[in-house]
Image (cartoon, rainbow, N blue to C red):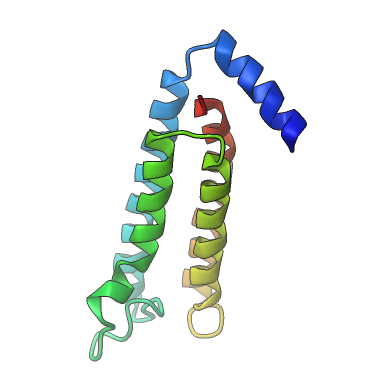
Length: 133
């Protein structure tokens, strides 16, 4: 891992990281929009995500915010890149996978979409490596 980080340091010195940071930021915002679409779609089909709860008995609003807070953490880490930013991004991906695992039993279609979003977040994390200082 240290060899990879050293190579990325050399690349970042030779290139301007701002376009990569902007692209990674736009991608994290896109992930957040995908999560909003999943929330709305799951409610519309009648199989709400576990973090939303059923429409007749919704979860506490802080639980609703959980997937969005995870994504915001990834976005903030992209805005202020450090050597450990990739680890924050990977923790966000693991947390998104955890959110998706909660829906596997009751709403497998919703879980599949959440897994796809977590996979996209993993790819964005790798792109964010280029935005490191």
